Image (cartoon, rainbow, N blue to C red; front, side):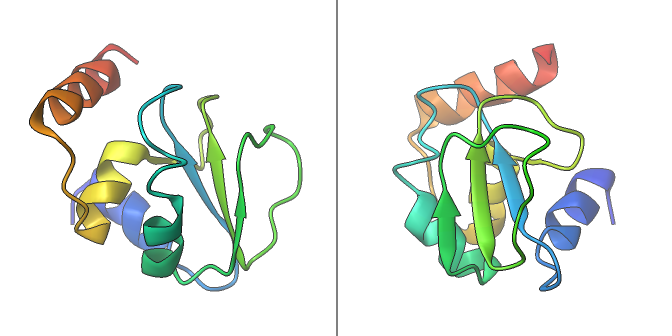
Length: 98
């Protein structure tokens, strides 16, 4: 299992919340409900600030990089969400620059 896939798999653990990171305007909020279903989370917190507690039943969205966060592009791929090709390319380039 690659590190990228291990991170996505570990984010599905039911005993902790899931943090998804992506740049502002990438579609985190637009796809939040589908991602929450995929990760088995009942709550969605948008615009989370690192350091604030995350409940086990919560999907957290942030544009601030965090060591425990799943990259938005990886999360959408794991959830089977197809992004428009230009957005997927831009997010892939953003991830390589980060």
